[in-house]
Image: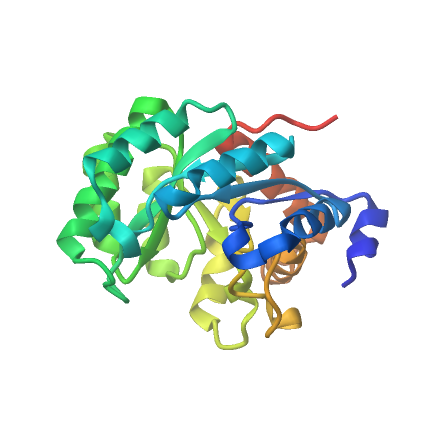
Length: 269
């Protein structure tokens, strides 16, 4: 599957979660972003994971009309949370290109930060999402029940959001559906050993499905070993089309509409 094929087919898609920042792409950020747009990626959501990159994220989003951002603190770094962190997120959230709060959530697999600290910081993000009327981008690994419980308790049924880079199985989908949250698939769904994830992929409702790269990591199977980038989101969409017994066009259309609904992105002419 080549980039020009999709460009010539006239299909467009949205990478709902990428990390195109200098830390990973150095002086190639602009090339990577342009390559995505040239491939038919119409819009990119570029969430932050640490407070320090907010100025870079805002600057990039202001340079590219079709690039949007989220602001948040990854659970790995919850131990670094301060009152000043919250103030900076609040201030950044006033920017019109900030379409989400996050990436944030719970990661009990690595536990780079204490689980209780992660939960406290996640609560702060949930409150901020409600206060700003923005969706929340949730990172969840080995903490499904804890995350879902917090989202129910703190969200009070008013919270919009997505479980990004979904790594769960079909057993957690009913509770996610009850929350009304979206489920986003990354390159992991293309891996040969991701059987439980592949089994879950057809069970997500059409109006709650998203695609993403989560680049620079998790390059899809067809480009495994390469640094991931937003243009490779097509490989994720292609695999979802196969798993859901539908067409690439259908996946592109559905996920684009869903991303625009969740993040309130403008439709392109």
